[in-house]
Length: 289
Image 1 (spheres, rainbow, N blue to C red):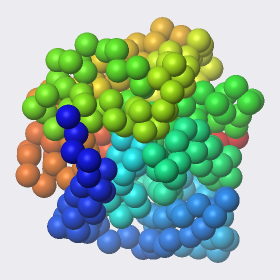
Image 2: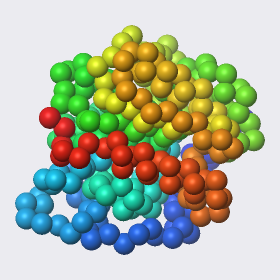
Image 3: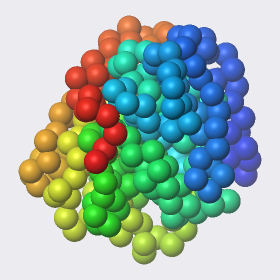
């Protein structure tokens, strides 16, 4: 049973943890801006800004749109600031982080609509996200494909939630004692999609057709309750002819991307592998066409 102040605790805890972490690498430019529909965004430049910087995309520098995790209900630009700084520096890419609307105040499709608005506007080389952000990245690619594009050149999904029905075995197997509990997952799903009969229909894993999507990098974690749905989505993509690089990180829990490198050498090594994969896979020819 979750306490009545569960959401307040989640949001406060995420802010407190972010405040205690090192800031991350200094970059040539980090600035907040307003995107389509008044969305708050944060742009991270991996190299010095040149002329024509009003657009989020720069000629010759890949742009990655980043969608933060947080169960659709918490986290923001500040909680994932260090992750985005490290991504920009390690992968030699510009990063555009999105402060999408959160549930339960703004249930589905609000967050997805925000992600789509930014992707249509920015036309990035890649879209990336962790946890709920991975869900939004995958769902956005499906929606963009269905409307005829343009599509990012890569979807990078880290410990993604792809099945809001929570039917995969790892939810029960790893849903206690590993940091992300099954009851919290049930709360997140109900907050984002209150009607349980609609959860399969909006889940990427249950999409009727996953062909024609961008190449994917899918990274899951052994001790993550969402492990099986991420692994299953990688298999579905590969079976549909989508190029996939997929790895399940041994010994790590959900959320290892958020600060675990500071205390756990295995997590730090997993970060290095993730950044190496992203650097290799992000298209270097500019924005999506």
